[in-house]
Amino acid sequence: MILTLAFRNLFHDRIRLAVTLIGILFSIVLVAVQLGLYLGSSRMITAMIERANGELWVTAYGAKSFEDGGVLLTPRERHAALATPGVKAVIPMIVAFAEWRKPSGGSTRVVVVGTDAEDKGLEPWSLVQGDWEDIKAPDAIAVDNTYLRELDIAGVGDTAQIATGRVRVRALTHGIRSFTQSPYVFTPLNRARQLIGVDGDKTTFFLVQLEPGADVEAVRADLKSRLEGADVLTKPEFRDRSLTQWLFRTGAGVALIGGALLGILVGTVIVAQTLYSSTKDHLNEFATLRALGSTSGYIHKVILAQAGMSAVIGYILGMLISLTVLFMSRSSPLPLVMTPGLAGALFALTLSMCAISAVSAIVKVTKIDPATVFNR
Amino acid sequence: MTSTPSLEADNIVKELGRGAGKVMALKGVSLVLNPGELTLLMGPSGSGKTTLLSIMGCILTQTSGDIRVAGQSTKGMRAEELAALRRTHIGYIFQSYNLFPTLNALENVRIALDVIGQKGYAASQRAEEVLHEVGLGHRLKNYPGNLSGGEQQRVAVARAIASSPSVVLADEPTAALDSENGHAVMELLARIAREQKRSVLAVTHDPRTLGYADRVVRIEDGLIVGEERRPDGLDAPRVTDLTKRRKAHG
Image (cartoon, rainbow over all chains, first blue to last red; front, top):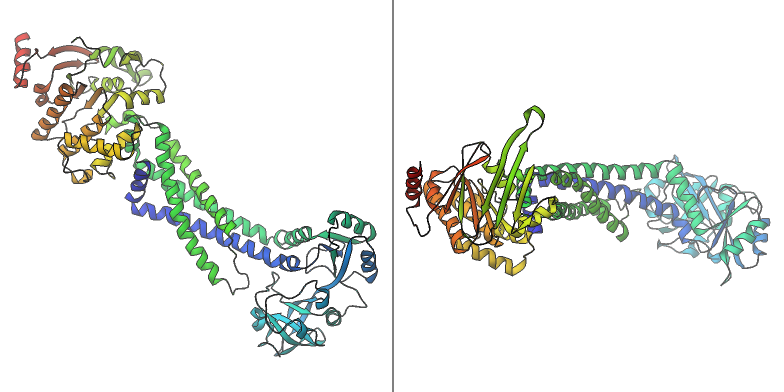
């Protein structure tokens, strides 16, 4: 009967129910979009690091992110790393911003990622046209097909210029997007050095692959002692450092999380207000229940059931809208991401939000004097 | 009557308000309800009828004095303990019926059973049974909005007796009803008292109800000022009998 009464109370006033659901829905969509953007951004920022085939990263001291490593490491550091026990391979990698001159005039910034295929350190994934062999050609590059318009090219075979070097698109990837909105350009290591004008054999990172069974922490400590002026980071450390740089030092992540918190707050207030007013409207019925001898717990359950039902309906509607927004954002510069974990967290959040909203109504109902049933 | 009282009010005092606005609603009232009796509590407005009913029903607490339900004193009991007493021993009928507008007749009775922990098919069966008992077997699925005042009050009576309480307290049960429905409800209450051996106390100032009473208790200005009992074996017309008796004594 608790569920029946809660259901009937909820659906008795359709307008109030609509207001409640709009409050929850607004909250869910706002939180889903904000956290979806946060997750999408995080994935973009860390995609290269996650895809790299190595346990440790050697970076210039203080390198803030994958795109911001500078080109400062020399063969001396590489040799020192290679001489470290437990190290199987040390793969050099160039990552640097460069100027992309559009064929029809104007320019845009790109991030040149230079690494050799045979090293198997970091390969462009999601290749939809051409392959890694095609990129080995002297002027060859691979770009993502979602940036073709921005780069002012039509596809494979088109040419452009990076800094002073001419390049030809030989392969296309799909979905390798950049948080900085500067498209990634994949090319072999030496070609990358030429394009960005690096002297000698300097590199941005060394990706360190370990011998099977080697202790990551021990090797790292050894590498640190051998490589003065360089940082030796594990994959999670480098990932966190990049996230901190782009999401928190720039304030983007704070804005996204702030938006999500605002959504939760607004949703809670709206649900609390409508639940309170619903409880107030049904106060005489709750007083009757109390007069009939119900425990206060029984009445609290009715209110919580009302809140729970609102949460479930609001969540389903909110998720439908959120998934539609997510679908529409697929080809946008910053696609939203929804994971089962986030969906679960949103459901838990909705339930908690509605439970918290029920507190004011419960406080109100706790103060009911059953004697009011005689005053009607 | 020699049977054990279902409910006893012993020297009940109730003060309402504070300071200069303090009013003594009850000034030492004692009343005993016995099984199988329909007692009417009559008196003018403001005499303390409803206050006494609320206190005897463990809804309102007295300033002093004691209420004993089935011999158990309620002194010092907390709100939840009083609620437990209410759901075990007392059924209520209110002037404005106090039905749940979003529940149908059957559900309105079922909720009273749900409160005492009776659920599922057995509860539905019991609810249906009492609704048949009050003559509403054909209106089980009707919502209060679709029932007449008399029918709504009969649903309230069914709700009050569904859990088989030993005491049924009714606050002005006929006040909102026309003559025909008023008589029907009083007949029902009298039947509940006599056939089911429950104590029924009805607060009323409706003279139409007199004929159904086994006892009439008069309250004025917070004090019991008189009590009349129908002589054993006396039957209808009850109104006339009691009135004649009052005149004879008066």
